[in-house]
Length: 162
Length: 209
Image 1 (cartoon, rainbow over the protein chains, first blue to last red):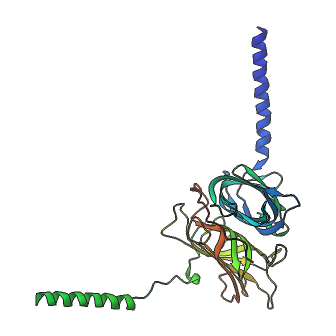
Image 2 (image 1 turned 90 degrees about the vertical axis):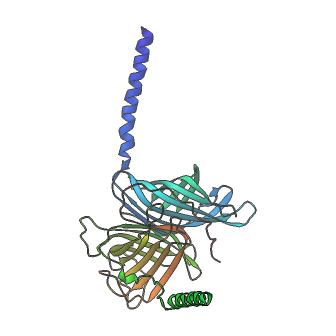
Image 3 (image 1 turned 180 degrees about the vertical axis):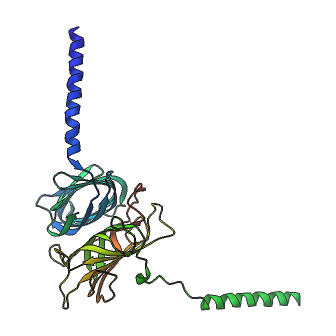
């Protein structure tokens, strides 16, 4: 009998936990038609690194229009410059085909889509990678193919979320 | 005799074909000023172009306003940053006021394609355009969406103009841009529907010296 009560109690606790967790997630995303436009450049803080490349700076260009159902259409392009492990200049290019986007409660925008990663080391660009980008008025953070690139701060140019 | 007659006819046919190929007018691209202002569609873009040996980044959005019935009105934004070096260079940050748009009759596999002229207002509150005397009052951006993988195929061109941003300006003494070195332009009938399948971008160009 005690076993049944304990099981029922556990189920109730799980249901309550899920119920409490759900609204909190929804409150973080403000779905609506928005327009994100950005073009600029930035300088990485010392120590920024991606796949063994010491990152120095980068440029970005973004044009995305989101819909109230969370879908979006648009383009994202980021080019990062740095130094390879053997001291050579290396340019990494990320090109994103954006298909989803939401405005977050903190004013940032999260974009989802598929991207191409060109490591700039002579190897062929790799396409079809999952792309998630978080864009604030002060910088761009990208995760491509599950690999996070350090936030590129905006030092020059514009990032507009209308 | 019959052989000679046949040969003469063949020669005449070839000659006529050659003359026709010379005389026939070569198809020319439609004048950018001829694109219609009533077409409904959206334009998005992000990437870089080469401006005389300097890389410039752009971000672009344009669409028709709610309850649009024609006449060229548009909303959106144009951002453009010419990187003379990583910091500095000159900027454009303007709201979009006017657009003319042509949707292609042969869309890409993802259903996009066409060309557009987009006008941004340098005189709007908070807008930024390069300084000039007399002042630039508008910018005119001409874009082409020619392929799903935009680099090397799509185009972005920006002009600085003396007329206000109420129609397509014609006095634009400075023109920059061209074929995309990286990024993409998408021109499509509406913002709805699926995004299609993402193309793999071509090998990116390295930073210019």
